[in-house]
Length: 164
Image (cartoon, rainbow, N blue to C red; front, side, top):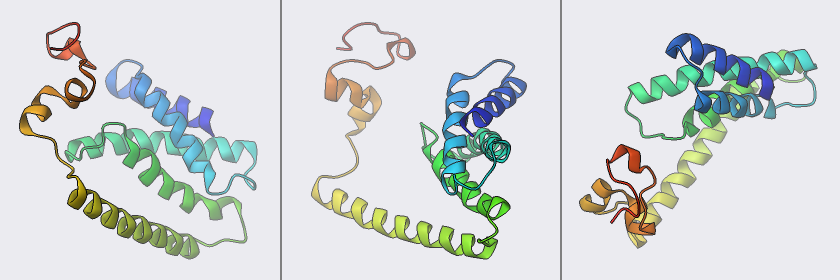
């Protein structure tokens, strides 16, 4: 599944961008693993590879769509775990006769509701205790400088070295 996701994401990225994209390839491998995790025991090796390949294709387009929507997801976690995770749940009935699409939809809704509710409470508590935003200056400089005294990506800011 991981190989199917990696190869498919790499091919699609090459077709779309004209070059191989390592981050898309790695997200494709992760997507293949996420896609098969909902039901790893019943698919044949070919079915697992195809489920992973579809996850690899899906993750590329999900990342591009989420970027276009200007949703802050720098590592593609929503695409890999949310979008492809949903695909993985919906793929279970394709290889497991004991499941149904309706049951999988109910499960997906339950997972979403639980994660959303718990995350909402956790973020409210964190916001109340210590805040979730940095100062405007620290946001402009980058928290890498404020926290570590180093620039993580000096090539993008025109400076080299320690950052200060």
